[in-house]
Length: 272
Image 1 (cartoon, rainbow, N blue to C red):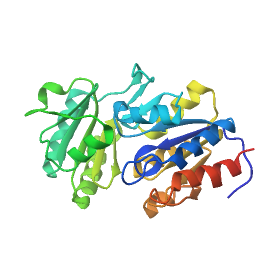
Image 2: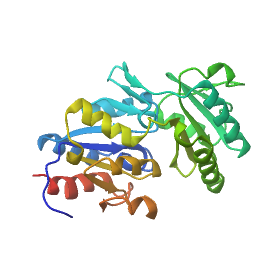
Image 3: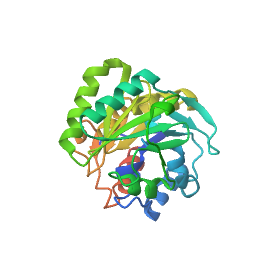
Image 4: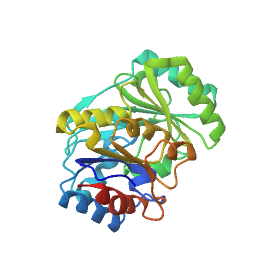
């Protein structure tokens, strides 16, 4: 597992990590976060979700750190005051939407506090609305909603198409955007500075915690960037082999209390 080390902060992904497959925050996960606090370790969350979609985590986890939504595209306080945000230009947003449609993926646009979709019955819309606890707005056209876009998502249950679209987006935009899959069925396109590696950098700067004292935990390809910016990283048991290979340790699945076990058996055992 490694030698004892000073740990000052844990940064956790939400879906596929902190929450179960059914989007449940378990009592054991809450207790594990409380154990971190008792050990003097701060805790923060980051997600591709909009910040509003993490509101239900604030009270049970007693969060005091800013929440990083849109993979770091927007940092907010507990009353959703925006501390910092990084958006896509209208031109890049149009190009991204065109690319996503060429691969026959559904398009979601997150603009400010709004979640915009073209079809309420599109893939994953209703389940996502249940998970984040608010409904999207249905629009016939996105052209009038491309100012201050925090994230554009391509959605499909054809995982190969999502993967191919990811590769073309990375080739097309290069260093202009961050284009990564947060799930096999979601391709997230954000400002290049809106990524989970930048989330770690933000907390390091604002909390005065060095990178080597940060532990990160996640399950998706977009979590690898924060693995690289932290002193120690943990992949979930439900992560792909590619993601697991980038982490320092691997815990159990999100359906087997993997998050809580990582805090109990890895983080607290490592901490000095």
